[in-house]
Image (cartoon, rainbow, N blue to C red; front, side, top):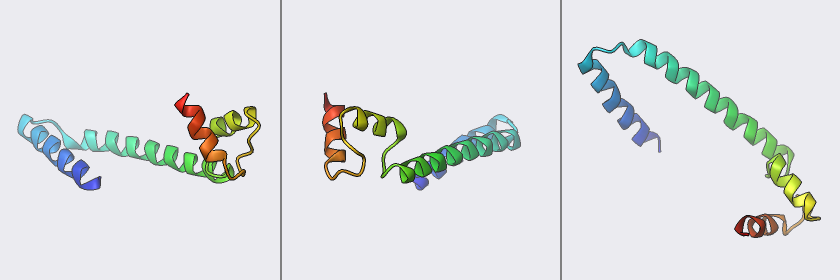
Length: 84
């Protein structure tokens, strides 16, 4: 996964060098995007850790069906609901 991104970034940056664009501005934008994505990923992991591996919306859906997130069949129920 990381290898493909690094390769793609290298091709993109090479094109920028050839066309004379400044890379520094792009690096700052990419760093800002990476920080946002990392924060978002961390928030989701924390949310799932608090909810037995489910997101809040998934927990709400399970509860509306009378299933508790800690029930043994909670994942099966969620998958069945998503297949509907």
